[in-house]
Image 1: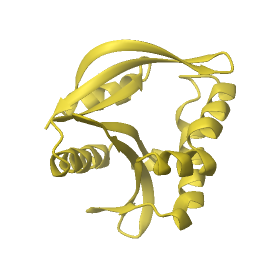
Image 2: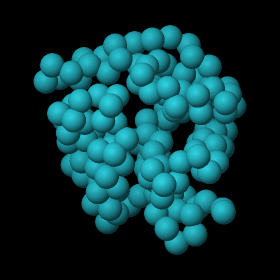
Image 3: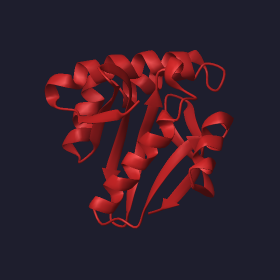
Length: 163
């Protein structure tokens, strides 16, 4: 099925925040604690947080398969590269090639913006997602640990894709 990408406007922020809350709470338990999921959703994926990110140049896209909302992605153009901040699918839509199509969309955005590549951070224990990124051409370039407050850290790989 063909995917469509709709850039989020202010009127769709609540829809995006509800989708993020749903996906994060079904995806991350087992990788990070429930308390950390709650904290990160509020800090990074709540409606106020995303409004602030959009004001700082982030772009969010709702992803549809036909008329069904199945996921979302978020990017931030930087000097040389496009930062892939978020790429999430509802559980029932994983494993159908949609993630690859989303990555192709993001790579296309990078090319349109004149960027040399895309980079992202991914939890080092998120093995399935790391495998998808490797399969689509991303290379691991380094590890990083970032303090995100409240006693939590993000223990990530930084991965990059040339476009």
